[in-house]
Image 1: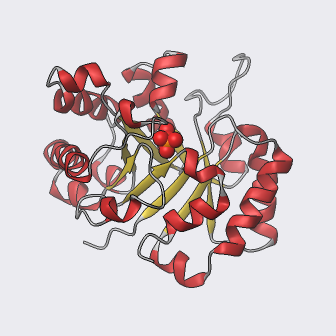
Image 2: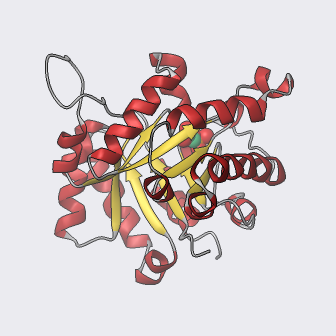
Image 3: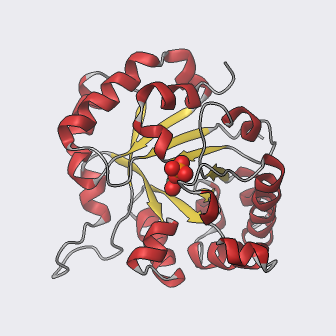
Length: 256
Ligand code: PGA
């Protein structure tokens, strides 16, 4: 089906811009052209580091894509503290994570907010990474499929099938994020399959077959290969392990 894997590092609220410069430089020393041909690599630093990381990427001609961790859906105006899609686009940002569980749980992003953000990202010509995932209570109550399907529907609401096809979805069970407790690959693949089937249902088989769906939650060099061995899993959204260039490079080179 020709879905190129994407390994994206979510740095969360870590690293000053000076540290970020070093991180992306170190990462680049550990990867070579053959790696980038096989995998799309992205880093998502905090807003304050985007300009510095962009400069390193452009100066050194690195095939590393720049991503942001969140965005506001409004174009401009009196919204203190907010950052818009055009601002990110001007920095060469390619991917924007929307709906990360930390945004939903800590900052109160609703399903509708996530949909508006994804729509604004696509309208601005960038690619959303729409993150969905169930909590432990929801999993134990047998609600996983219903929860992630509802989050996905809201996230992709009103988006045309051909546009959904070039979007990215990340399945990140909340109980696996930052806990060292990963979903086992079969469980992850099952949920990813549910998401792909939902997209095929709502946006057509073509979109379902083309959309890239990542797994996220305590991914590290030791477990990435097992996730990548699953036909429906097209990459990973990596938090903790993306902060260490050695570890992140090892995740990118998952087949080694
Ligand atoms: P983790 O975070 O790899 O540290 O579990 C993943 C994420 O939150 O995207």
